[in-house]
Image 1 (cartoon, rainbow, N blue to C red):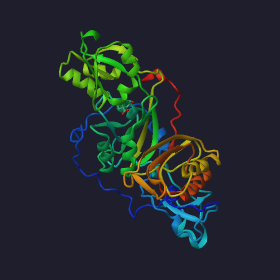
Image 2: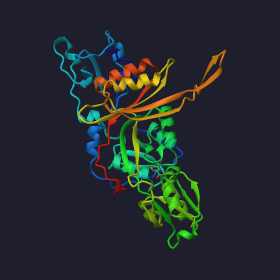
Image 3: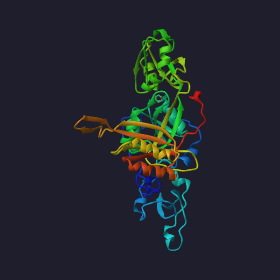
Length: 423
Ligand SMILES: O=C(O)C(=O)C[C@]1(C(=O)O)C=C[C@@H](O)C=C1
């Protein structure tokens, strides 16, 4: 049995800061496509927020590893490790956070049962959750933000980096950002930003992406000389654009809806945009071609980010995302993957990115010469909750082969019914 070591131990033991009363978010001006003074871009979102509140319970406390202080240094069961959530003493039993009663002289330590309010504090400003996304209204990211937080207030940001910052600086409560698309692959920028920032993944949402070719009213396909869109959208429509037999240059812009807005605002009669039907409505464009993604079941996966992690649970399917750099040795990646395979934990995603701090490992061999190996950071998503012992043990093993390991989040899987034509 492996002993639990940081960073995943943090997932099990939470201790509140001395006071959990937060100051009001500072008024911070961030370069962002949103007027924070007049926060009036709100949507009449649906009513399933309570579902998210219960499943995505947000801690108002900073994560502190209590386990480090344990005299035994392990956590193999028994209610011996007392942690706390939001000032409530809790005991850890079988690696789950379970409030337990203490008696007699320990009365003072008697844990107060957690309530839903402790787990899901309302936004500190006393109103809707503010949800940052990259793009302008009509972007797929806005639709993803709306799907993730139906009662939220969507906040458009001009760059992914800005969306991260709005949450870190309390301008927004959550960010919803794309990480991969079924046709275009990974959105690498967001993988890099996940590491550079300290936000936690608290959920995921998968959005069917249905692209349209949009132009000013009256424009015919033959007049077009240019198609503009987000690079991912251009990639997702590559074959369809060729089949449409357009004589056009393809140009990348920041987001799909921004492309539609640009065509409309500048009255560009030779330029079309690839964007959503909603963008066509918002910016007064006509749909020249509908459903031009190369695969009808085109889907983008977004992650929901927050300042605090959620408490991992075992009563519904959870996913956990980690990032690690491997240590010296041979077959490291194989050993890491085995840690999951031996415990029947499915991996749903593996991504490698350059290790920017130490990009190259030079191996000098006097007889053969000098080998220059690229160094990587590996991102893995696996299907288990950090509340499960098998996940904790897998990570304990992974840590033996890695020089760096961080749990990016343990969160409920998107289990909504598959309906690719619904976007
Ligand atoms: O431009 C948009 O509308 C976005 O929301 C961005 C984005 C992306 O970054 O992948 C999101 C979903 C689609 O895959 C295409 C573009």
